[in-house]
Length: 154
Image (cartoon, rainbow, N blue to C red; front, top):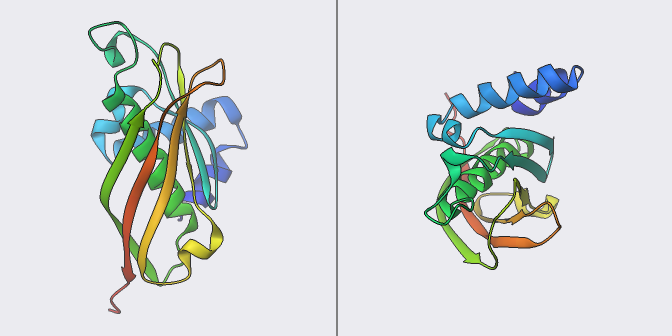
């Protein structure tokens, strides 16, 4: 079953289902579990992941560490890619560029976005990512670049 189908099924029971989906998806790349993520929204070309502010994500000054935020952005990007990519294509990350804009001193919302035309064929897809504080301030912004190729036929 596809990621988007699983998310939509889980969303029928928003609290329990969303939590179970988040745990299952994060388990596919266990380092995601270090940020206790929660998938907030998933649809083609868009994903949102909540990264809680708690001692496990803190840096030395008590704000959410940018690497924890980057993990949330990468989880959002991965979910978006799986929910969006045509069946004939596959993807793998090839790089990440981030700008640190402000302190991340609350629970964060990591978002990932693409345009439908980005997935037309093989090549590079630049996934736009950002992290936003509860007050609406964008604290981290960047791009995760994906290498997209045709799937090999069995």
